[in-house]
Length: 99
Image 1 (tube, helix red, strand yellow):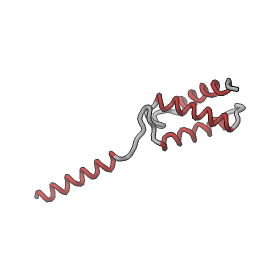
Image 2 (cartoon, rainbow, N blue to C red):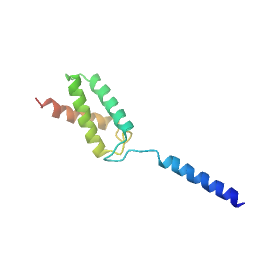
Image 3 (cartoon, helix red, strand yellow):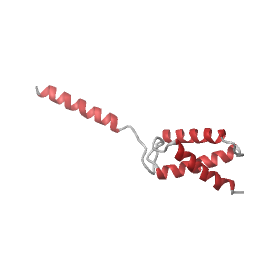
Image 4 (tube, rainbow, N blue to C red):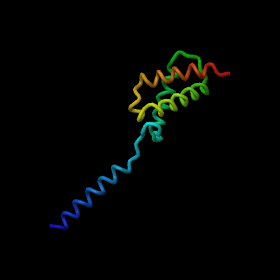
């Protein structure tokens, strides 16, 4: 009887450890997967806009937006498309003023 109890307990501990080890993003610190998703979405979104930005400017806009999103949201999923676009627009204004 104790043997089955220990087996169940060991299985429960392993299950908890396996799910707890999976990294997740938090506000202020995103995991690389969320950063990559954000940058991909941002770059595709910027390229589809009718704005005159070079590839280098788009990269700068998206990295600016990523920094702001990390400060504001828990993860890529928490930042909806509208908020990402709004942050991107703010960064476009900032980047376009730079020489």
